[in-house]
Image 1 (cartoon, helix red, strand yellow):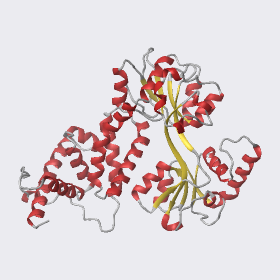
Image 2: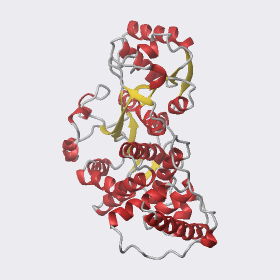
Image 3: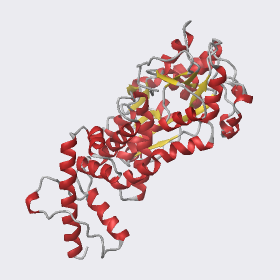
Image 4: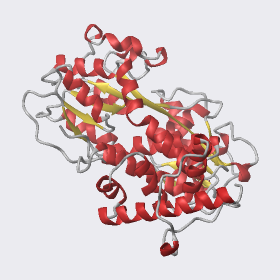
Length: 434
């Protein structure tokens, strides 16, 4: 079995259901489905619009797909999807009631909610001074002229403009659509950027102060700069959804229903959280001691993982991929200079003078000792910190090398030297009453 990987496809047997995903499942979840008698091959697609022609093709062989609500609506209109048989998906009862109906699919006859997010306003607090609680500042004001960015997706941008004017994002009334389009036309000279997923970076670089963006983008930017924030305007916004659907030409509809039902099991969701949750929490703690900063980093890591999974190509283990993305996300925070931050420690100091690392844990309070070790690890330079945190997760030199891009020999040397430095600094601090 192979997990999603951009546009790369995999050979598949004629008897196995096939899923086209924009996101992916934890390997343990797919393995769990196999243990209950299911078998599924997975193929990815490059972006949201790409799945439509795949499903519409005469030779399409997909049995389960994951698609955004906009594409699902088009597929329903084109009669490309079959009804979800609720009797075959009893775990639909586990869905939040808010996701059991939708304007694009009344009664959820053709789709099952799988993931969601929002569109809102990202902004730099120091530049605005107040929370921009209305779409007015994005669509109907020159106060921030030259400092505004919109989404390059016209459907999403138009939908938010419709909400500002008090209309449904699904309106078919020509007068309402024309009014929203005229609003955007008037405001366009004040907008300097149209972006797909770069809104957060524009805020970070201070090129703009106000952006129309997805919540995940701004969450990542906020983790790197607390002056950045996000709000859903009072007029309302768009709720983005990715949905599980079964194409009309599906050859294994029964198995497809079984797979959807399996994904909705409470224990499956718990398994996803258990698989990497504790390790990622420890990782975040290794980079951020402040509880609020740690929570922000952990959220940033989860968002980065979610966005990265469509690029996973199966050439390394899923565990390696998760650690690589998580550490790279964390490192992107610590390499930025921070006022009052302690000087980072290099491992290429005078190593000849360091004592051999020995186990001298006895005589110290274990909790205090662990806190001190973590504090010392946080002072290491990013790459050294990454190596040591992975070592503490019981990753071997070969796995650490695969994650970091170093050689296994280099990893082993680094671990030995870092341990020497930590031991020396641990006892030097203790002897000085720290």
